[in-house]
Length: 113
Length: 119
Image (cartoon, rainbow over all chains, first blue to last red; front, side, top):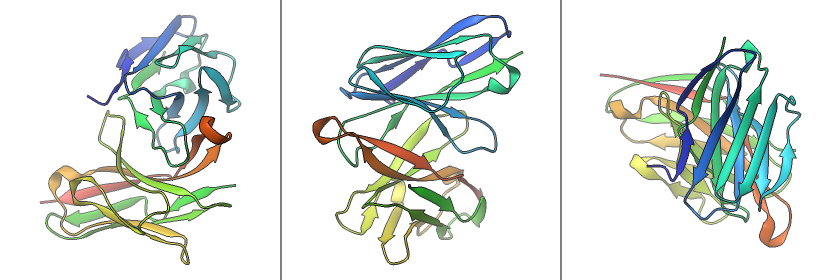
């Protein structure tokens, strides 16, 4: 148990579908993150929420839409994705303050057909 | 701007022999540094962290890393490899974003080093 739970673990969707990824943390952290991990590429930071406010959007296409209703929950809404969006999507959380490590969930393996 | 370079994309060792995974970093400020491990189809697990205290940092599963400012390095070592150590390892540098009590770490990940352990 990592303290950060992501659902679903696997998702297959067509390019016209709408789906959502969910992340929940029980660690009392105030910052939450979405990362994309593709084969043979470094982890890409997508979004950061700090105290429920979005503080980072790393030039992510609008077909990815994050939502952070409270400090414990983070969603990533997906619509009209492309096959190149297939990847492992990782959620993480951290405490505030310099040097606070990120705690990661096990990720959602997304396949876009 | 911060960056991190993992010098080897693949490292192969025999079980029971030492492990060395190399990492160099660049940072404008005094950074925090981390090593994470990722087993197949899993998220990233924190192995150890350096945050300007002791330069030799001990982590979980017998791993340790030494912060060398003069060499801008943060290499990960383990005296004796175990089969369960086979995984991908990421060196990470972090600088604080925001201010005061609301700051958080903005992480930059290395490309990763895949460790293979042979029986």
